[in-house]
Length: 86
Image (cartoon, rainbow, N blue to C red; front, top):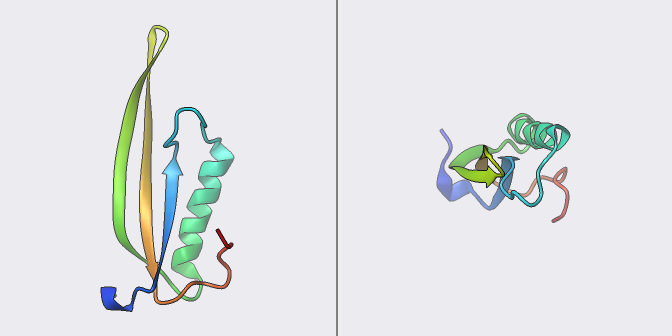
């Protein structure tokens, strides 16, 4: 069982497009999925401590476009060395 008192570092990972002005490519979405999987498989292993699910409905000309994304908050007992500095 994961104890929240052990969380010292939180990584926020967005999967999907959250900004209609900067659409994410399939490759960027795949990279976010890979980062999420890495958080659960490499040491120190992370645990999901929260999720945000959201969407936007855009009207582009005569068409409606729905942007969906999910944001994962992954908690770690310490910052992983393999995580890029941001």
